[in-house]
Length: 207
Image 1 (cartoon, rainbow, N blue to C red):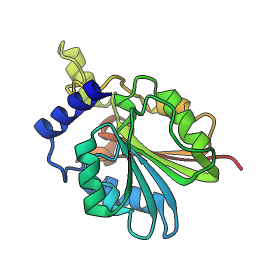
Image 2: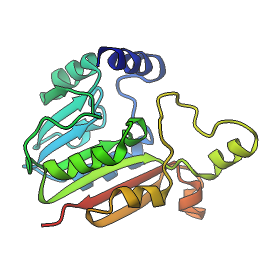
Image 3: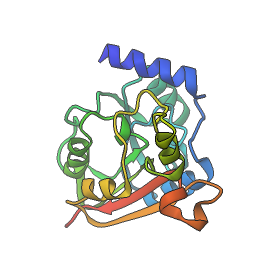
Image 4: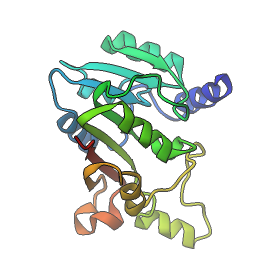
């Protein structure tokens, strides 16, 4: 875990400020609305410094989990949330049906076994609970053109997977009412699936 932590800490410090939120206007509004509250018990996986968490922490009981302890310390100080240092490829250290909402924001692409994490999220959700997340729309036009030009479609060295919308739906197969929305990008309105930078998703654990 220490080696993995060091890698991500360097990545966080070198590439992004603590208050960075990818596709900020769209994602903050979508996550705040989907998490809801007040009174929700929320597990925020991969919360980093809590920049996105801040938009749905107020009035909710949030537990933030991440591999970077320094980032977690800042999240706890800033937001007053409970935190957990964890390798999110391992089983989650929570009992079944412990949370109303599980958030997985820009995390699945970093995980060695994404389906196992989705299954763990389902396990710790209460019946009727909500899974909320997003992942890069890896097969957007920009990435396809990079591939045709002989360049790797993904420039982030910490990304282990590329997800198409169909891949996201497959990950959510055990959930009810999966909803995908394509956001972020100046031309998204012309062809959301092809031009959006982000695939945002919600799904419900069956009762």
